[in-house]
Length: 119
Image (tube, rainbow, N blue to C red; front, side, top):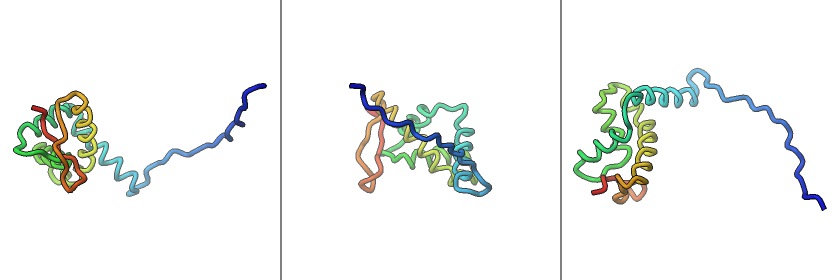
């Protein structure tokens, strides 16, 4: 007896999402591309580790992003880019945890992770 085969799925053509002027997608993409531009010649691992080493207490990812934005002199864009920077640094922190360089030191508000350098 031959194995059962599902019928092939119909060929569906999906149009790629394009960002219209002032659309949510356009605004998000703008933030991401600006963050990419600011971080282009920088090492995210070094940025995060440097900020954590200088911190006097365990720090949230958002605080790391805010500190970087202030120190990098992003000017009026700093506030607007913090959420995209937070996302970028969150991924960086996950990698640093896997390498044993950073650890979670509890939570703030029972939700946001606090980070510190592994000593």
